[in-house]
Amino acid sequence: MPHVLALDQGTTSSRAIVFDDSGSAVAMAQREFRQIFPRPGWVEHDPREIWESQLAVAREALARAGLAAADVAALGITNQRETTIVWDRATGEPVANAIVWQDRRTAGACDRLKRAGLEPLFRERTGLVLDPYFSGTKLAWLLEEVPGVRAAAEAGRLAFGTVDSWLLWNLTGGPAGGRHATDVTNASRTLLWDIHKEEWDGELLAALGIPSDPSKLLPEVLSSSEVYGETVPDLLGAPIPIAGIAGDQQAALFGQACLAPGMVKNTYGTGCFLLMNTGDRLNVSRHELITTPAWRRAGRTAYALEGSVFVAGAVVQWLRDGLGLIRSAAEVEALAASVPDAGGVVLVPAFTGLGAPHWDPYARGALLGITRGTTAAHLARAALEGIAFQVADVLAAMEADSGLPTAELRVDGGATVNDLLMQIQADLAGVPVVRPRVQETTALGAAYLAGLATGVWMDTDEISARWQVERTFEPALDRGRAAERRARWSRAVERAKAWEEAEGEP
Image 1 (cartoon, rainbow, N blue to C red):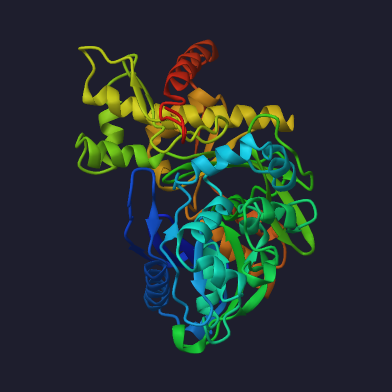
Image 2: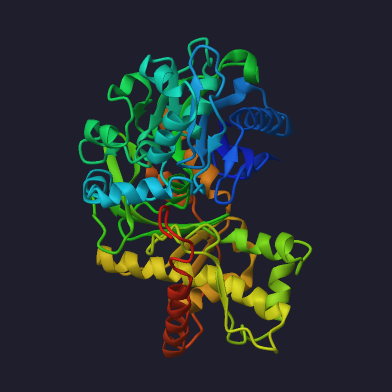
């Protein structure tokens, strides 16, 4: 029986999962790594810890599966997107810590680009908005702020990449001939990639002060499903073809078998990420969503609309670690279910700004409607509702942009084990929420992309046939009442916006 190894490099941990040819997980290993917060709003990772933890769990997962590397048909990579790494090609040493997608340090730079009238150019070429979320301004910051980096980059001594590129380069040899490449889904998150021409854009590079010759610093851009190279034999015991790469949310869309236009998935992790498949139609958003490649394979690119919610599961972590209301994340459901509603309390979890459809890096968290009767249970319920309200807002924007009604919302990620959250989501969004039998959809998508390139699976019909429902949550809240609650939520969001002062303002 052929097996595929998927490396799932996330924001807080590195995981590796071995899948068999039925799409079932055979073995899994996971290891957390440090979160580094040098200043308020700054988030960093040590790239060496990312690589070391990912290699360790790959070895551990193979051992738990009782497999040798020679038994594995292919390896797929999926990764936290936008996180920016620059390293020395000769030594493999990073020039600085990775700047994580959550990092807000370049908000001022984005503001300056907007004031210069450049946002329409970036929007039209890349499908993105000018926000610190994306890699381009992070790379520009490293070039400007880290001594010696610009000169080394212009001399061709450095390599830039998102996490997938860093892993691929190390897996294929690092300084001894590692391949410096990425796939279209990750390239499209940099603010540097023209999604129409499918090439690095010289005008955008110049606008950000990045060396104009892409070959000196930027990775080669490939499809999401092809053989990029093999692992160095001594890393895992034998060479394994690396044959699938996709950013985590695009991989989850593929793993959820959202293969037809109009199909939507949402991943509940540290943040929430909704993607709607729009097929071969490159749909430019009118409602502040992102237009992004969903994947490229067999010579064709599929596209998606995306809405990113920056804080979702992280709000439950805050209840645990920041307030001490719960001892573990699993306790939040019982606490929130102990009251029939949030008692008028609204929690806007804009801890690192607001993503789609607001895009306000200066928004901050707001807790409104507190009375003397407010309890920990009301806060817990308001936290879950704060996640679901954000998702409902993005889903409404997607329907307005695409003109495609949402038949169902396929969900995955750690928070989907919370039945109360899933029911609240169905009630507020007004669509059935469908939880699949296999929850590891991000890693599964990377495995599918790798397996399609190496003959483990022949076509996407096989993938659709393997997707199965575990439970469906039907909307139970009166639509008029749901509209009232969403209007109250919108009022709260307006109060959270523009709380922090923009750079240079009094």
